[in-house]
Image (tube, rainbow, N blue to C red; front, side, top):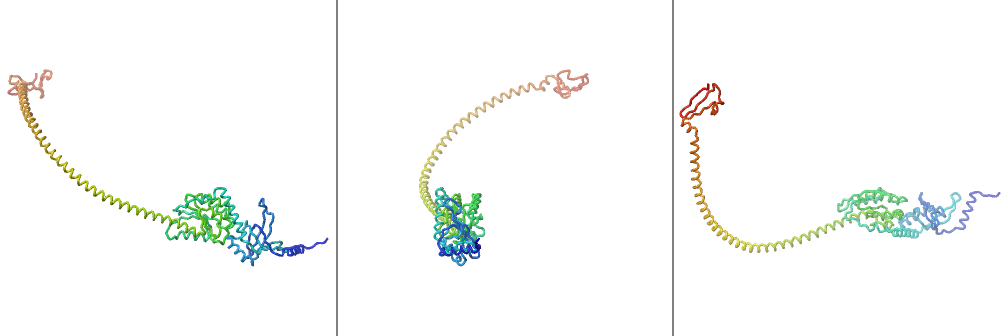
Length: 430
């Protein structure tokens, strides 16, 4: 039996590949994973079927450090995103087969324009879905409160952008007092979507405590923004019941999250500046309104002062005329009252004189009549006086100071006193 070693077989494969695939060519693939080690970039490539997510082709790829050193930053600057799983890329590759490590594609270049186009297509598809769902304008149609000071912040606690945001709010030139609460979230990598959605749910549980939600992260364009271009996260932000402001540190095309948020600015410090400007505009409107009210009030007061001055002059003139008229009427009334009083006095004096004479006559008649009646009473009293009766020879028998009128009032040996007209006799009952 003829045979060759595995190394010899692999060497034949390597030679065949080198003979038939000498020149590099462009390959379209989706990144299944991306890892950087020791300056090299290792990728897992795949292609999915048209009707499902099952890969129909898979391969390894590698971009050596000598190429990746310039290629990686150039792609990041062009797209605003680093290579990440799920991204579709157009790679200039050369076939490579190593007897010990097997087959891999060696990446020599990446076309950022294709990735930008694919990213734009994905964003467009998500926005179209949100439009069909009727939610794309929900949060954008909300109005930020002119007094927005209670802020829910969704960011990484250690992000420099969060620190800059908090510092700018706390040290604003106007001395405005903002109240912020951090809801920590992962702002880069595969966990961005679910982490931010979880933070939004936490904010919703305390919705009455906040005026606005801000989603911020630092890093400018030097970070992966793919997590902000997802349908589920965009739908959550679009349907959030209070305004959402994004400042996720990118410089090129807006992410889907920016498109559905109420307000979108570039950086965390720009978000802080927007909130400060919002309050400063409110303060300016209040100051302007106060000045307008003061001006209107002053003009109204001046008009009323002039009107009162004219009314004062009118009333003084009218009062003078009225006073003279009333004084004339009062003098006429005074003369009439004086004349009526004299006439009444004379009439009443005559009446009083008549009453006086009548009273004097009636009093004299009454006195004479009563005097006669008293004389008769005196006579009757004198005739009933016991002393006058005693003058006729009668006596008055008394026992213990009481007049005896019945023999049964006394008994034997009782002492009696007999009162006579000219003396007293003491006696004893036998």
